[in-house]
Image (cartoon, each protein chain N blue to C red):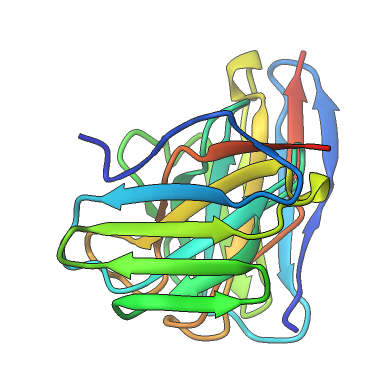
Length: 113
Length: 115
């Protein structure tokens, strides 16, 4: 079993709709959770970080964390074509060594005008 | 915000040559930097943790003699791919943070193509 799992997609959503991305992780000791956006050929860009159970909203993005279910999600409201990218879920590594992150395989999102 | 600079952004080299990639933290000191590798359509895989003033810690399966890491100062880490081969062609990305529990900032990445 992979440590951090994501559906590879592509997740196709019409412009203006909500994109819902999911991520599960295997290490119950994980403390920090991040969503990164990566455009093709570019390095990842941090979108959201979440550390406690519940929802965290930032603009059009909402991250949701459920530690009991070992599940973290990202909602993108009012999706725009510029949101088309690969979204990477990242979690503190199994040894929770500072900010040593383990990345999921990424979900490719396509927003169609 | 904090900026991590990575150079070069793209390099093409012949098989058997060595390539050095630099990662600099421009406005903060980083005692720890991380080096990732990403193959096409795959996620980032951590290669090694670069520690200022000491040896790097390599992940399982990463050859330390092939991927030489030097972190000689608090603002600079270098990754040298020695005797590069076509299978080493990949996107290499460094990252750093001010403190161990602060968010990571990523360099812009280096696309290595070995002919």
